[in-house]
Amino acid sequence: MLHFYYGVMGSSKTAQLLMQRYNYQQLGLKVALVKPAVDTRAGQNVVFSRVGLQADAELVLGPTHSIREQLLWLAAQRAHSDFQYLFIDEAQFLSEAQVQELAELSDSLDIFCYGLKTDFRGQFFPGSAALLRLAEVIEEVPGGLCWCGKKATMNTRVDPQGSVIKEGAQVLIDNHQSIRYIGLCYEHWRKGISHG
Ligand SMILES: [Zn+2]
Image (tube, rainbow, N blue to C red):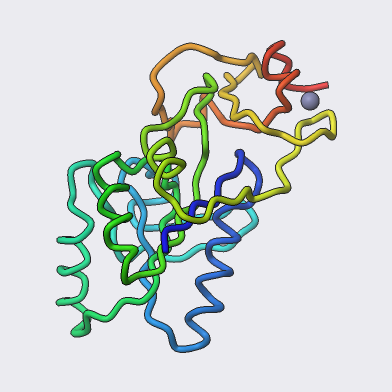
């Protein structure tokens, strides 16, 4: 079964993913932790949560990688091929073709994808759009809040002065911290107000 858990910046998606993975590991179930290569904020392999949990991904997917082939490679490294569960962080960065592969693999695997639904312009990421089309279970990770206390639904790119940016490339992860991402309610995203 293919699952998509979506949430805004600050909704603790990665922490949820890592806790769920831990529960499966405690039961002795065979899990693989996967992330797309585009997110390098905390090192190439690290799946990092802002609340402090982190783990090393076993697979880092390039944009043109076949997930099926990468899993075969991983199985060869580990001397077993019977993964039962895949946990994928930052799933919005998957390609449409990779999500299609996941849908096919989900005949025999339980696959848990966590990621953003939309970008800072309010547009779908290709991976998220494909997951919304193909996932059999779609649930929101709650908890993201706007500065005003309302539920945050919009991912927002802000510059060092706190100004809301609404134009630019979809993927721009700046390791020098000159931009950052926050969650805002729809009203404050629309009006471009990033703080009280
Ligand atoms: Zn607000």
